[in-house]
Image 1: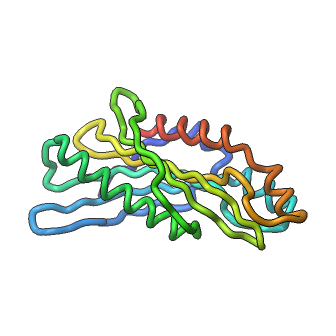
Image 2: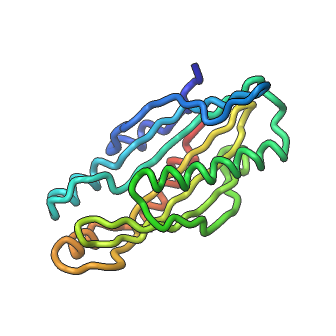
Length: 192
């Protein structure tokens, strides 16, 4: 069984752990990749939007993953690149599974996480709910602080881009994209 990644529990007080699963995203003769994934949803934002609009759904999520490769090869630049590339594609698929549309990778850069430089991928997406379309930002960081890889990221709405009326106005009032981004990056940096 893969050990779970450590997460900054104190920063997740208003979040609910929605899932804790172990998956094997890749297996071939001579190499098996096993992932332990923790998924959290922001219950505070969910309650605020539900109270104002009646719409009940998850608006923001955060995930932390620990990958183990067996047998455990040395972590080389090529291996980092391969894992980051596959993780990036897998995260785009996860966004689509969460109901986001028009998912596109929009950014790639480094992010300091502890003593490591993580590869950070940014995504743009859309989310349609009750006749309102929201613009969404997603981020995924990939790094290897030891002989196992960590993936951490999430997504959050940044603006109402289509739709009007009470639901659109209430949703717009609940969005704070700069605070959402800052909190997500703090959570990412807290994963070990």
